[in-house]
Length: 311
Image (cartoon, rainbow, N blue to C red):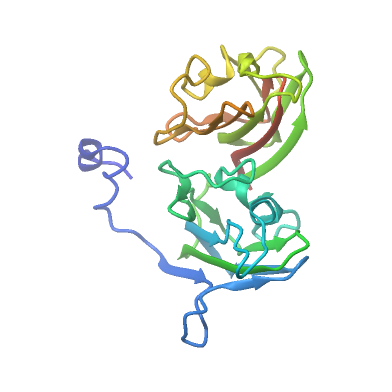
């Protein structure tokens, strides 16, 4: 998509006048009987298929919500069961191993099982809902699933996945991948957030960090990001501190904020916790063979890494 109109209006709104191809579709939990039971329930250990599409297409929007508070009068479902123990997976092009494989809460930024509202252009949490606008293309079908890994019933799970059916994908289209990792790091030893092979580009991460239980403060943010591309022995990108990578400073001195592509979802002074995101939309980091993203840190952390890889 190019032209003087696009260039004059900018990259975000400039594309709207250009007529789109494809057929708009949506998979959702609407009541098939015409009532208002627009949700599914999930028994302990149960999996449900949210979307099962054939042919080529791309997911344009994902929205979900579920009860994330204790309601003694009706249900006993606990927030941590909902957000950490619901497993979110997606498969592209008939693959056996999921390209998205994360807890539901962590995928959207609820890294410690706590719903904290924030709004970026690509994904966020808004007034009880979770949303994602990352494009997720596929050429030969896709399947999206949710699994209840808790030992309690999830009584209400609502979802809507908007997508486009396409006649085919052009060459050079990567597939969306999101992976979740958890580790207790050791001082001076790098924590590898992502290691990927093939051709693609790194598109961002959400990092949930907590100080060791015997310490206080945020000195763990002194760790530098180090990005090694295509097997190099010295990183092409070497940063100056974790909060610097997330476009903050001085240990996120002013607390939580939400910018279009970066922000701090949570800064908990009492428990020395931070959740931060950065999405490389304007500055994706390409690689041709091997890619690693490493943080030098001394934290207990959860990380969701987002990358597009060539099929």
